[in-house]
Length: 262
Image 1 (tube, rainbow, N blue to C red):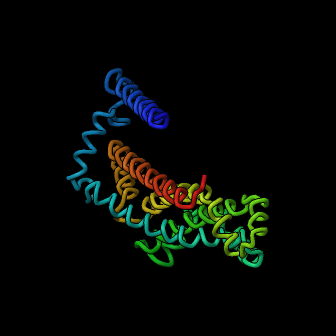
Image 2 (cartoon, one colour):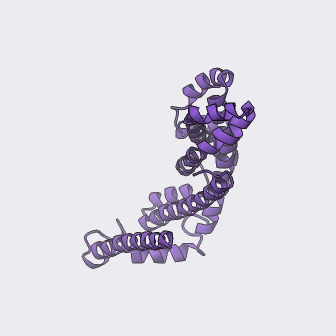
Image 3 (cartoon, rainbow, N blue to C red):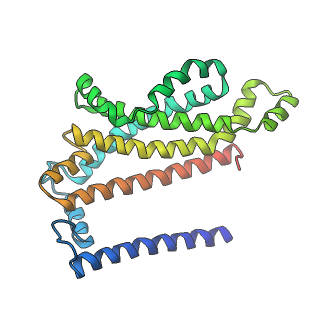
């Protein structure tokens, strides 16, 4: 009962903060006219543009849902592949000294390079298609997932491993029954960070070289000074990111419950 009350209070506070921002925005632009609607449109115009863009292809050649679908497909492809490679590597590096010595020097060399920096190279090698954008997103997701999985395993308390050894647990049992469940919160933190990095990398790639996607829509709108469509694209990215984060949170709760993680 107390948890339900806390959730309701959190929802009401969050809703109030959003409404407050919209009211201030509306007052500044639509009422006080502190900025021109062309330079920075108000929430009413943004809402109208959002509805219009759902079924109108102009001025960038596709509807909002078409751009969103193209961006989401590429993002999820690179993101999931990066997570599938990064999480096991991070766990292996933290758990096995040989893997750590072999992989960590190369990983430490690649880690500081932002995914965006790879875009020109991948465009030259693979063109501006889905593959090059997915590779950029893969690297962004891979780094975040590897770092957080590595940190999560390394945070396993020695006393827990010692108790497992006392009861005769094998090394694999220590890993999968003690270390991995302990690392679950950090793993999912990495997945959240990777999700944000993936969106950032995708939009950057589409801004530079693409013919469809939210980044392309934003870039084309900038070229013709359609600030309203730019903001619509930004809000679409934010809303989809928030929904995906909620899904990750629900998955984390289920996984943690299944592993009896507290």
